[in-house]
Length: 388
Ligand code: NZQ
Ligand code: ZN
Image 1 (cartoon, protein in one colour):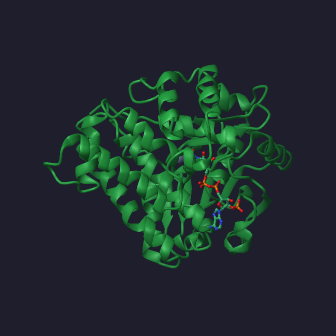
Image 2 (image 1 turned 90 degrees about the vertical axis):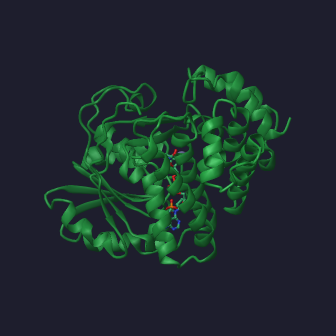
């Protein structure tokens, strides 16, 4: 196991009726900006609950943060926050709203030329507004990690950035807020969380027994509750386990002291920027082929995954066990309503010509746990996924 420092300062308020905790958790002397997306929180009364909880605070609202939040739109919120002297952000929504809040938190006090530098150039900063969130879509883990992914429409790119000051102070996880999620978003959430685990687990062995068993527990939980959440939209326990698993998948815990891959995400962000595909859909179309192409390097962990997660019996021919585990992964993504290849999404050869070149231009030429995912390997993965 490698050296690590683990610190996750986000307080979690978990369970039905917890939105009221906002009242005490945000000191009353703050001027709050409540951020939300395209309106789902208005329809399902989550925003009303937040407004009621904030009735002793001074607050303003900014709605319209879109899926894959854009720098251009977020800059309107930055201007509003600066104009109104906002000093606390409360994100109410899914990963896009929370990520948007993280960008705004860093951008408002930023004294450089253009806050986009924070994202693309990782410009250093030492101040950020405090932020918290009410999560309505379990998927990204953004509610208690310090990362965000922002798109720049003008440049046609989507990029992640991280900063210790961007950990939310608290996150409210009330599973009943997810009852109104469209089936597609449930599928997206389960698959995104699943792939967050595989990015930190399906690498090379590092004797991280705790991390491995915990990762396997999260994968098995998602495999069990994913279909239940689709079939029984009001099953509280299924929603609660889905919400907690998605949180734990990317709150930093399972990733300490072990290698990380993240190449499926790296390729996925390019696919979203090029084709507007949902984040999780890009992952479902790439992961099975990423695993096939790199099966030699990942062999030991793939076998462990096959036996422990998919219960493929010991004694099964090793190559067959790996094939079966990858096939079961792809089938699980399909069960959750996502397409498990680019071919099924109708994406053709053009992607091979353009995507590796885009990565090259951005200097993203050594992805993966050992930097072995070069543009050549990306091309192999894309070819396999489009079926040529
Ligand atoms: O905008 P509204 O009207 O709220 O509708 C949203 C949106 O259309 C809807 N929704 C959310 N909660 C709902 C609901 N509809 C009904 N009932 C509810 N309770 O769902 C749609 C998608 O929302 P979005 O926030 O975009 O989804 P998600 O949480 O999957 O976030 C995706 C974004 O997060 C980034 C992705 O790249 C993508 O931009 N990620 C962030 C990460 C992080 N910060 O750590 C890691 C991830 O790997 C990921 O990259
Ligand atoms: Zn993700």
